[in-house]
Length: 231
Image (cartoon, rainbow, N blue to C red):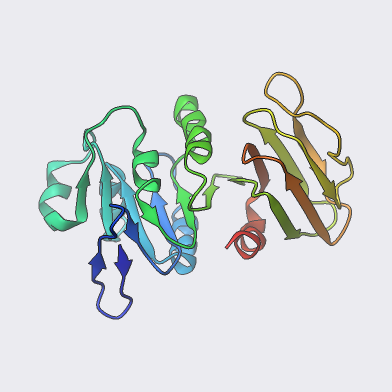
């Protein structure tokens, strides 16, 4: 859909996705810091709720632009309050509500909140979703960190000493500049080699990976740098 900032109209694209010309915030049903949500909506003003997260949005005073999910956790009250054309029901059970929402968004980028905390299985499913839906690029905002899938080439402006972790979701190799422990020549893979707790040693970090299978994890205060680098 195209979201028209002047009149709020949405137009479904030919692919069945919803195309927006601004960044999008996806709200999930996990733990959400209200300050983080307000900050996200300043950066990404379109709000998409994943299923029952629409109830959380309404409780906090936000009306979702779209609600996507199988609606197993969406309350009757939220259904009644929201226009029918804002409710996108996806009945299949092979994907999470986060994946259902992300897969149907065509936008310059996405900030996702409420995808972590509480249940480990939900958190693992969020990282699976980043792998399954590499487009649009998405940053998951957690309690202390941000997490995103590393693109083929990435340049990040970060303070020296910043913690930067890399976690492979599949076999992946790459190269780096600006890290205390370079990643060149390492065959990363779950159960074989990971790159957590690395450190920034230059004003700019440059990463290259040979496939979209590496998660980048940074302290949350560096969200603006990640937004600038990815979007």
